[in-house]
Length: 453
Ligand SMILES: *Cc1c(COP(=O)(O)O)cnc(C)c1O
Image (tube, rainbow, N blue to C red):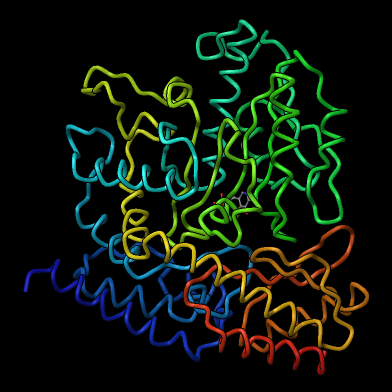
């Protein structure tokens, strides 16, 4: 056997034993990063090692330091899972090793991404001719969309930012709901736009459209950032009135829907996104609700031309075609074909399967909320409209003690957080692998933590 075949065989075996361990292993890791680093060896060895042995060393050193994120009982952050077809397709992406930048050079993976983009726009009910790029994350997708927004709005104000930069440019306001995601702030920082002005939000974290009307100054260059899916409540901003007001004032409207945009793929949940299709750009993650492996964000811009104007590439050695190249839609030049697992999960689930996936997350979240309401002292803080449940148990100290007890128990992972001035325990359901039995086991662990904390 050649070294590559042996190494891939070992990797396959380690992957299968990892999956086999997920049913019963505690969800939190058993080793710290320092302990794993010690096991890996701190000094660079002089001698080589066969690829198969490297895979064994790596798997053995890492085993105890792995968090069971692919388990059906991981409910921290908004993590997603990896649907089997998407995982297998991702392995092929590594084996194919295509630098997915140019249609002429990497026609297969360029085509897969083009089909995936068309399917996504159809599934979400967004304009069929929008520009779609696959950057690494929602943060970089927000960056990409807001870059298109910045340069388009400044161009309308008579300023060419691509040629002249930002020094001396007309003032550009960015308005965002008070509970907009932190990553939008990072993107604005990277773009030299400073911190956004915040617009008040209601008890569920939804931007107040009347407050937005009051904050807008028609005629001033403005970007308005709305949100589909608040990480604490799961709530969606009121897109209809907010977008109408913003666009009447001449603003560009961007929607950050890192995990919420896929509500539009479900007939039952689509009402949450009503009116969102009128925006100018949208961000989502495929590695969250759509359950592809890390890292895969999606940047969608209504005007494909506006996207290409900011991320389009030039270069003597690039043979660029008329229809636009994979590298024209993202900030990166060289990159893996990360849209391929997106195609795979969409082909695996089909339109109905994506709807069932998202509906299932929501059903499990509702079951969590019902179970939690029966626990002594528990208060569900949000209206559970989507995949998120936010809970407090009396005062902050008690909520934090229960959060610690759940993590120590290890049956499930739920994150501690702060929301609207209170300590909270957050449950986020976003993995295809979660079953009703997982929810029952996790609720049992939480009940135990409430008894013992
Ligand atoms: C997770 C999240 C982001 C950031 O996504 P990354 O892929 O981690 O960069 C942005 N906005 C919202 C609403 C999110 O939930």
